[in-house]
Length: 566
Ligand code: FAD
Figure (cartoon, rainbow, N blue to C red):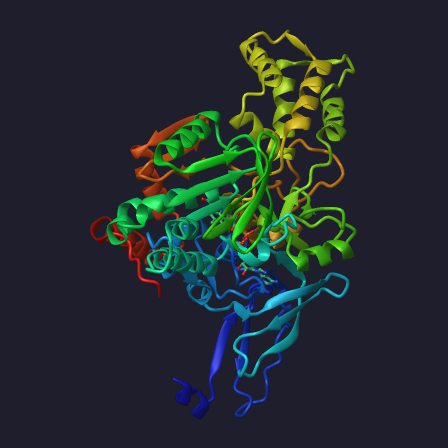
């Protein structure tokens, strides 16, 4: 094809997306260029990050409308919920990653990808500064700049050590695929070292003490995976030392899995107790040295325990590039980037932020609720009819997805009672409810509503939402429309982002999973484990990874996990 193109003059006709007409381009060597109407340059969209948020945005964006560039030091997307399975070889690392260039190719290859790290965002000049460090002897290392019209910041977060001394030096983290691979090798190191002939039992016990700091979903899932690996596979290969294995989960609050329903928390604690996993709650790690973990608790005071391997999983912190960006735009006092409900970074033109590096910042709900009630109370009577109350609630839920999520997932007695009361009376048109009661109840919600959780679910939905906004941007600029009933400043062409909570899982090992689904539906046991398998298989980013993950699960059922240290 390339020879044909160079030997003969060629004509390519393309439909000008925005001009509507056909523009003719000819080979310059044979004919002078034909006068053609100017095709407006496509706006430059730069996406930072190829995680859940960035990839979801990229996959759903109509890339023919924009000049799209993606910057990330990782040239693949990783399915993070299966990282704990990678630590013990239940699934292989390569089964849960998809090359970003494959995703781009499926979109028609119009998108450019730069494998580099963004180290500075310059909103004043609409540029990002990037650095590439692939292999030391290769050309191309160094810094470059990328200009943007719209910037989509999806940089995720890093592990949070709370500046605890020794954590960086001595603990493993579980954020990236490389972390999971390192943990897998380290587990095998502990077993091989414990099996050497020149050790006494105390030394063996130390080597085989696995400490997980943080009793959230990641820490708990890793503990469960490790326990399964030890009892199902390693006990057969290391029969003499296996009885010396100890797995401890250290959690600063009073329970593990606090973000789940109490029934799940209790079940998990009891199950871990039965499995011999030592759950230490109300205990804070204050220092990690090369062979002991130092802890403090109200009941036992300061203690220290020798350990073989420690995994630190206590939540997320802010990346330096985001901290620097926040300083530039007057958000230095925050932990993550504040955006409005349309994911636009506050105080910054053309910059959007989504996923773990951002949060939809809530101006206090009550500040705006008064305004919404004032509009609804047209006759200034201080009361609203049932229908009006429902309209107001609709508005508040559109404006504050967190309130809606809160109402759906938790029983907020005061407020829910009022709503139920109004529903019960819905038939009676005349019934009027006192606005002040509702305001009081909402103030209560205000103090309890939390930010959206930092999960893949939120990140993926935000990416999808923002891509749909970008796809409709031009249309909406020409035919603007506002959210139905919200009449206040900050009004936007699009409906605000609304998070749809689809439930969450906590795999607890031994083919048992706890599932908390919308509507407070709780299921624990083997049936939920099968639900977990189906959901995670269906959520894979491609048919290739789906096939790989399912075949890994089958391989594990038939042959067990591979314990080679490679
Ligand atoms: P990430 O997915 O972390 O992506 C960030 C991207 O930015 C990466 O591509 C990274 O390479 C890139 N990047 C970083 N620095 C730079 C830079 N300087 N320049 C350019 N690019 C950069 N959530 C769930 O909903 N369900 C689960 O079961 C679940 N399980 C989890 C298990 C584990 C072990 C972990 C670690 C997380 C889990 N999560 C789960 C949380 C979920 O993974 C995160 O919420 C999600 O990854 C956030 O998406 P993101 O796009 O914001 O960030």
